[in-house]
Image 1 (spheres, rainbow, N blue to C red):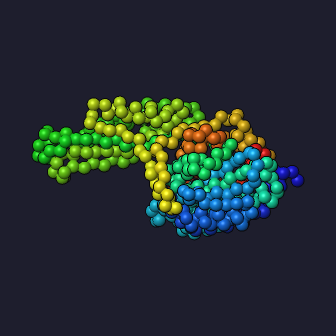
Image 2 (tube, one colour):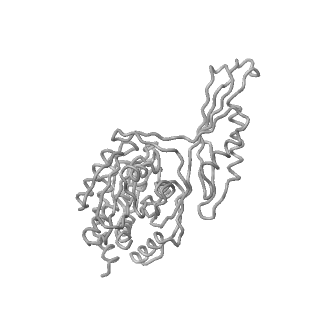
Image 3 (cartoon, rainbow, N blue to C red):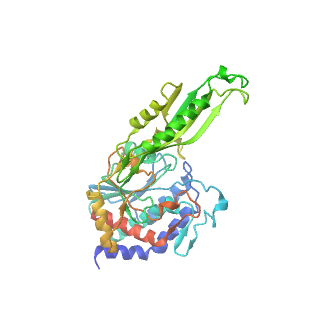
Length: 394
C-alpha cells in the first residue's frame, strides 16, 4: 500500500473519531468573541491526538504544532459562528450535533468547524505515519472571523510572529480546490442637513433627500463596476440606512447609510472610496472606510480597517498544483478548481501579507449562515486525508 492509500485508509478508520469531535464542537456555542469554551475543547483534542504542543494566544486563537522542520505550513479554520437566526426555520436542534444519515448536523458544521475537526484528525494521521518531512505544521482554530475576517491572522502574523510559507484555508469548498475570492470593504456615508419645522420644509435642508439622491446614483454605479473573468463582478449595495431629526414634525438634519462593497480584481479601497466621493461631491457629506475594534474573549481589544483585499492564486502555481497532485493521488480523480463567493481569512493571509493560500474544505458553502446546516461525513474523511497528505508532500 502506497502512502496516499495509507493516509486515506487511516482517515476512514478514524471516521467516528472525526465525526464525534465535530459533534462535540457543535454542541458548544461559540459566537464571535465568545469562543473560550470551544477553544479549550479543541486544545484538548489536539493534545489527545498527539500534537507536539497546543496553546491559546493572546487574541484567543487555539494553535497546535506538529514538527519543527524548516518548511512552515499552516492549516486554518475559524471556530466562531454566526447566531442561529429564526429557530423556527430549523428542523433540528442547531446545537445538537446529531450524527445521522451520513451527516453531522448543526450550526457551524459547514461554516466551519468541520474543517478544524478534520485537521485534528489529519494531525493524528501525520503523527501516526511519521509524515512530517522536515516541516513545522501549525493547526489554527481562529477566532472572531465572522465579525472581522482576517483579524485573527493579522494577530498571528504580527503578534505571534508566525508567518507560514503557505496556508490551507478549510472554509467549505464542497471538496473542490479554491484559489481566491473577491475582496470587500465597509463604507459609511453621512449626510448633514439643516432642520426646520415640518410645516415649512423649505427653510431646511433635508439630509434624507440628499442620501436618497446619492442612493440612486450608487444603484447605477453597481451596474458599471469592473468584471474579472475568474472572480466575477465588483458590486456595491446599501445594507442599512438610518436618519435623525429634532422631532417627527421636523426636517431631517442627519442621515447615513452603510455600503457593502465587493471588490473584484483591479479594484482597491482608494478606487472604491473615490467612486462614492464623486457621487456625493457638492453635498454636505462625509465618506468613511470603517474600522473594526473588537474585544476578544481574552479581554484583548484589537482592530483593523474594514478593508479586506481581493486575492487570487494562479492555477499553475506550485501551491495549487500540489493540491491537484494530492487530490488525484488520494481519490483517483481530477478536482474542480474554483473560488469562494464569500470572504475568508485569505483576505489578510494572501491579500495583505501575500502568503500563498489554497482552499479546501468539507461542506457546501451554500449552507453557510443558513438553517439546517450540516456536513457530509465522507467530506470530513476526505478533508482529513487531504490535509495530512498535502502537508506530507509540500
